[in-house]
Amino acid sequence: MSAFAVGTTIGTAGAVPAFADNPDDTLAVVASATPETIESAASVPTTATGENAIDATVAGATVTVPVDASNGITLGSEGGTVSIGLPFADQAADAEVQKPGVVSFDNRNGSSTVPVVQSDGSVQINTIIEGADAPTSYSYDYDCSGGVTLRRLADGGIVAVDGAGELVASIALPWAKDARGKDVATRYVINGTTLTQIVEHGVGSAYPIVADPTTLGSNGFYTKIVQNSSSQGTIISVYPAQIKWNAYSGDTIYANYKAIVPAAYEGNKWRDQLVCHAANVGIWKTPWNLDSWRPDVGYARTVLAACNPQ
Image 1 (cartoon, helix red, strand yellow):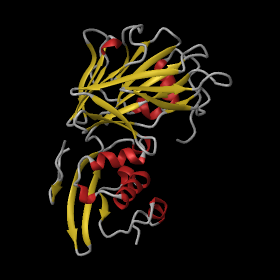
Image 2 (tube, one colour; image 1 turned 135 degrees about the vertical axis):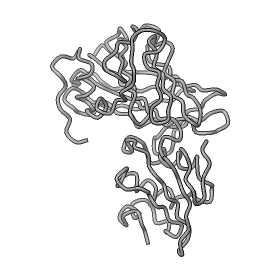
Image 3 (cartoon, rainbow, N blue to C red; image 1 turned 180 degrees about the vertical axis):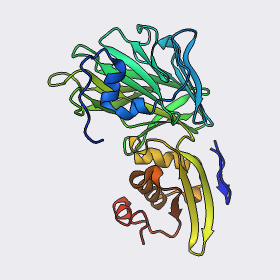
Image 4 (cartoon, rainbow, N blue to C red; image 1 turned 30 degrees about the vertical axis):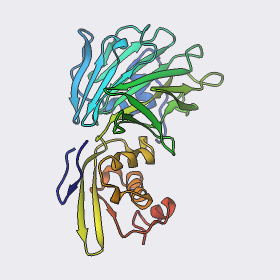
C-alpha cells in the first residue's frame, strides 16, 4: 500500500435513451443504458485470439480479460492483484471483440457478459439480459494471493481485503436498467468469496436489461494525499483520481482514504468532509481540503455548510 506523506505527495443520470432497435447490437445496448460506459472505454489492444483478449496497463492498474471466460479477469494495483471469476464461464462462448477495451461472452442462456475496461483502470462487467427466461442471478468469484474476504460496509458498499486485512479492491453500487431506461430492482448477495448480483426482472420488464458490478483496485481513488499545517490546525489535502465518484458508496470512498492515512486523521468529521467533497465537487475541485478544526456535526449539516462546518 502507498505510504502517507507529510508535506510531500504520495504516489499513487439523467434521462436514459431507449435501447437500440436491434438487441443483438451489444455496444448499442450497453451504450443506451449508460452512454458513458462505452465513451470511457480504454483504447487498449483487444483481440479474440491467444490467451487474453486484453492485457494492458490503464491508469496504473494492470488488467487482463481472457478469451476463454473460465480463466477469469485479473485486476492488479499497488495493493495486490484480484481475480474475478465470471458468471456461467463454464458454458460461455469465447470472447468476441466489440471495440478496443470491450469484449463480450455469450452465456448461451439468454444473457451475455460484456466486460469493459474503463479509462480509470476499473473493469465494468456488464450483463445483458435478453428476455424473461434468462437467469436472475449472476455470480462473480473473487480471489487474490493469500486469500480474500468480501466485506459489506454499513451503507451497502463492498470492498475486498486480502489475508492481511489490506484493502485490495472496491466494488461499485449495483444497478440495472431495462430497455425503457427504467431502474430494475437489483442487489448484491455475498456468500464467502462470491459476489452475486440479483436482478429481479420478469413481469413488466422491457428487454434487453443491462446490469453491472464495477471493480476498481486499491489506491485507484486518490492520486496523492498531503498533510499540511495552518494557524488553525492540520489540513489533509486529498487529490481525487478521475473516477466515477457517484458510483461508489460513501463508506467505500472513506475505506480507501483510511487505507492510506494515519489513524489520527480518521473519524466521523473526516469521513463527512471527505464524502461531502466526493458527492458535491467530485473531480472538479482539487484538492479536497479536510480540516482538523471542523466540528463533528453530522453529514447533513456538513453538506449544508458546503463541506466546511463551523
